Length: 139
Image (cartoon, rainbow, N blue to C red; front, side, top):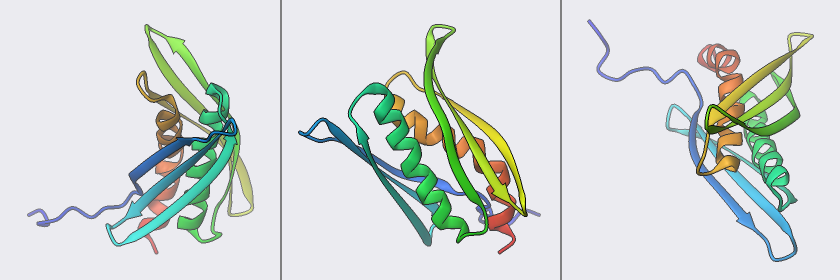
């Protein structure tokens, strides 16, 4: 028999806002939720260019992830890039993850033709969901 409500064992992408500021910069805000009651928000500011907006969105997501683990795991954004492949735009991110005195790299991607910056935020989540799903579920 299944439970009436599935257990939410992963962080969920709740909100993404990218503002292009008049001074040539951008600001990204990402909100993640866990079990619908906990919210984690990350913000970042960067250059308002294609590459700058991707990095800004990915950094905001990394900040929200860092809040969600309360210091239990460390994240560092190594790179983010939008590439054209198979007639579509794919956003790829590379992260360094430090947990349990070990460090390793993870890669995530997201197919995003319409909003590449939003795709960068989702690519970060795709890179980290397996790692964080178990860690959050056990708290």
